Image (tube, rainbow, N blue to C red; front, side):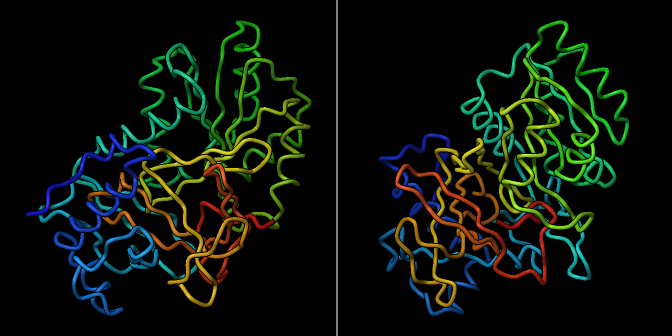
Length: 326
């Protein structure tokens, strides 16, 4: 009988042990993942004794199958934005506390306590639809901070500007979560000088603008906001953990999250550090779905455990959360 591992006790020294326990658990509990493993020739889960032997499920399965490791009806389901005719990914959730614990810990580990901090959201494309995991995260952070000036904005740039000015006058720490195209539109019209605010761009050009490099995006945002405290979030519907990057573009994953890079032409060939390839994510917070996801993103690892995003491996199904290339 395989028991669900306590993923929030994961540290560097026991990451492989917990990952192997998660693999055994999901091989038994997740019919889609088990079927995929058997299809690629892995019939005996006990033959997997190393982290590098664990198969990664292609992310496209979240569009076509119910990828879950529990038998009951989901308590809620997150949905990605629909791009083209490819449909939406769905991430089915039984226990929402896995997601909440993951994003709270990761955010506070990167930025400090959320208490007494104001949260602003410039996320029009996500507010326009239901089932966004990003909106759920930002709303929950607002709930924890309980700041009276918290708020979401669609295209009300004047109101957002007034809110920022008020927070600066009050010398109140605050964060602006923003979808990339909306932040660009806002920043191009401003000449601010943020002293107490940080900006977190969440990706999401969604075909609304010409694809630009991360450096180009950062240059516009730094100019408009008058600050170099611009951060990027790496997150997606199919993962319950996030990673944040500062100006250097190196994303720092949560303790229970690890990125492995595989060869473009061989998804089972793990590449060494500094070699570009397909990003594969181990996200142990995904214990109720699948912890081992092969994305469509290109990237590379660094010796300190951080990783970089280098673009897309396949532009035919571009995910709404990450349309930029470098």
